[in-house]
Length: 188
Image 1: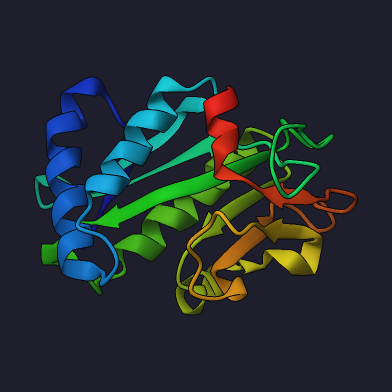
Image 2: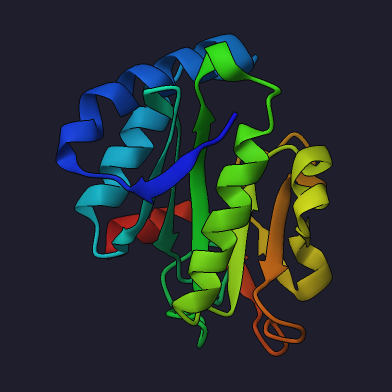
């Protein structure tokens, strides 16, 4: 399927809501999508929201995917609070959703490949993501602890390999260290 990636607009929100609910309800064993919608709203209302890096994928005349990147500061400690020196250099890719009627057709890979290029163009040093490492490893993401970026106990990871990051250019994450503490969104 040919898809077009474009920036989301407020007119897309009803379709995005429906897509996220169905995608997570039918595609995961851990979410009915309501918590994911809450995350999207929390990001959009925070100072970390990047509207220019919030996308929909269109194909066959409808929205078939949604994903967004937001600025994400690492914490210098496991409990959050103080930001690491790399507070403005990273983005978090979350959530990522593909319309349940279009699973396993390469849409997720196409969306993220194009999205990663947009992040590079904006000059960010790295991308964080929590998810299925078997999928994200194919897109160049590696376990974040390999780079000195550690998940905290507040993240419901199935295992440490589920927290990953990707350099935007070789060596771009050198010297960046810290902890992923999702409560940092509350301090935007």
